[in-house]
Length: 399
Image 1 (cartoon, rainbow, N blue to C red):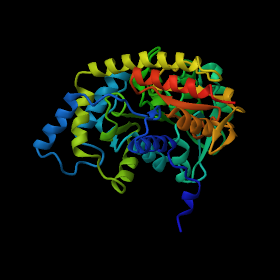
Image 2: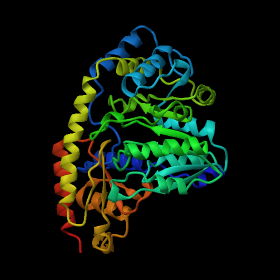
Image 3: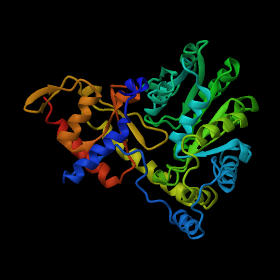
Image 4: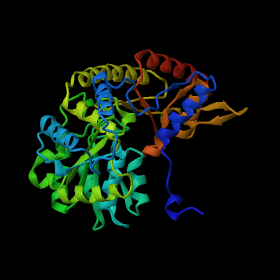
């Protein structure tokens, strides 16, 4: 009875893990979740107060589809301040979160049969959105030995006459990789030479721990003309529930994306938009403080993971995820539903950790690597320590 497009659509595994952890907690089970893709900090008070002021002023009606002028101006100012990019308000679209922004891009630019290059491991929604709209996601493997940096030669080899777009996500979800300047420059050259669109997902920009974030769009006018820069208020300002994301790019593409949005959601929440004006334009002290704490936690969790028998993790350079290699546990057995069962992939390892350790992680299978699981360290140092201790104890029970 359902549309054919849903036959291949996979639900978000990250949201599923969060939902399972919440369900167990509601039943009184003490679960430590490393599944959340959101900061554990509260939204800064100055941002919440801006929303209160907006409500009291009656700014609760429909707005322009693409966002209030004040917010689009704030996006332009942020991109100039942080990235050295010059845009005008007409080059910006504000949407209901960056996921919505990305969907608007694929809807506006990808025809059925068009290929979209996606470095792997990847955020789960990239290939699913492409498939949903009739496109063909083409994964390009990265190597753990390089810290999951993208290999330009592999990317180039994946280009065909059907290739329409390449997705860059740096800092990366799920690996925490920050693509090297040489890699980003090579992707820029490839896009210009082969007439490809670049979608540069920079949502974790503020959580770049080693080096400085450089937007691919800043590498030249010809590159900028082929690039859609995507960002959000969710990660830098702990505003995941406010649902504000945005894109900046060539005006004709932004106009097309706005037309799409006009027929699907109309404008994002008016109150959230006014909060975002304050987030982007106000003092940025909280951003640096959160980044400093995430940096401390990444060192803690990676050291702990590398001390686990059969587990290893490269040091992520950005975001708030560790992508742990658990293939050293494969073949070992655990007692599951009254019988000994082997661990044969990331789904098994995630189930084992949830049942035996009461620790929730996200299987790497849906990110493109069945040898890994993703752990978010967007939780307290105390919970990270307790979670690692539970994992040690559970692994000791394996046969």
